[in-house]
Each structure stands twice: as structure tokens, then as C-alpha cells.
Length: 82
Image (cartoon, rainbow, N blue to C red; front, top):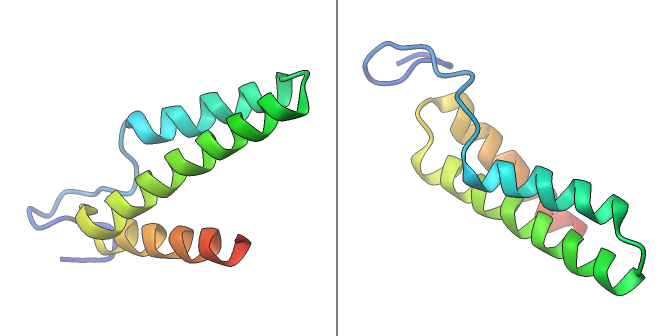
């Protein structure tokens, strides 16, 4: 198993977007369009939550070492922001 290969030898550097990443992008984009500060904060929190879920899933069940590492780095960066 290489850096970007799964147990079957398939390259897994890129995959189709999954629900948490789509949620992160959608809520993040919506937060830029929100007119009220309260709504902007809620949308940013939802966006960050989706990114946190994605990173946790990648860290625990990523198809390759690279994807698990990206999940771990993302979780670490999110933890430092708080």
C-alpha cells in the first residue's frame, strides 16, 4: 500500500465529493452572501462542522495513507483555530 494507493492498489488521491465536503462548500459560500452577522456566524459554524466531519471520516476511514494524513492535518488545523 503506497502513499496514494488503497489496499487493492488503486490510486485514491482524488474521489468524487462526498456530502460533508459539499456541505462545507455550500455553507461556506452562503456565509459570504449572508447579510446579517448572526446568519453569517451560523453558516460559518455549519461549514466548519461539515469540514470537521469530513476530516474525521478521512482520518478514521480514508482509503489511503495520503487521505488519512490530510484528515489528520485538517483536524489539527481546525483544533488550533479554536
